[in-house]
Amino acid sequence: MLKIFHNPRCKHSRAGLEYLKSKTDDFKIRLYLNEPITKDEVKEILLKSNLEPEQLVRKQEDYYRKMLKGKSFNTDEWIKIFVDNPKLIKRPFVVGKLKAVLANPPEEIDKLIK
Picture: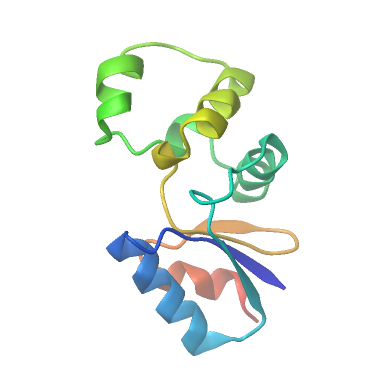
């Protein structure tokens, strides 16, 4: 089963969800802004996507520009930042058993579906 980390207010996230729905019904929607994302979920996204924490950051967010821009953080610090400020995580992420993708563009989801 796939899991999509979704924000219904985001057009990219909505597009990813619609694309996912067109490909499969074997998925769960995780509204990570409504029920807080956990450290383990962030670690799972990082591990399965093979991305560095800085690659997950939405740099257009005010919080990033005012508080984080130009500073260096290690992975554990980034994970805490993402847990405390989930809006900073790019979206939507779709997580499968062994791999995760940023579904922007939505066609990236094809990498998880056989």
